[in-house]
Length: 270
Image 1 (cartoon, helix red, strand yellow):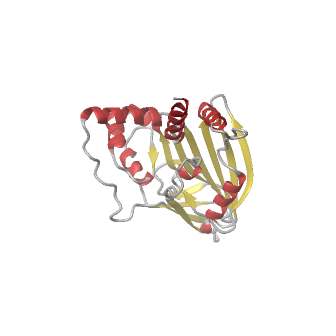
Image 2 (cartoon, helix red, strand yellow):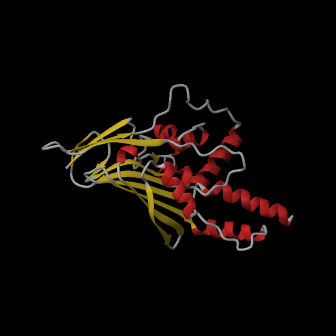
Image 3 (tube, rainbow, N blue to C red):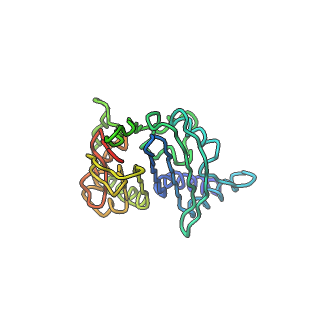
């Protein structure tokens, strides 16, 4: 019975790890095309404590649990493009969450690749041989200011290739579908995903849907708000979405949610 209870705890933890995540990515770009990426990840402290306790009970010597190691962040830097370097890692502890803030620098934003999907920030809970999280890459095209012309930046957002849409959701008995909706409501109530780009200077022109001063908002997803919209939330919970892009399509009209649906965002600044 004790082993069974440990297994229940582990399964519960793995189901909720993604839900208790707050992920924020901010790309800052200078007028010469260099800049930095600030990645912040927070997880509910009670979930971390539960994972540490399970680790101890399962025979680990220290029971330590790390959201991420420096080696993993350095590997992420290499995957972000040529010349990207991890320059600092700061631990964060609040009343309810524990996490880190990692700073990556780049010399040329033209070589930078940013994963829109926050799955890579979530601690590895998969089984051996399981497929890696889907990488949905944001790329950039930059030209320096010339004479009176401002600096020009193009943000290329990932889009689903033709024929990769998710399958139609299977019909389930009413009782089972309600159970699934309630489960998803509990799992995702605290999840937040934020991605933005900030320029060094004043934006003179842009086609971005969401702009705040020198910042362009690419995504602000607060699943607590989404849950309040029962119709949209039910569709999301019962859908068979395979990517963040499909999720954005479902959520684009929810009040308080900001998602950029264009493929190509143009930003001029000086």
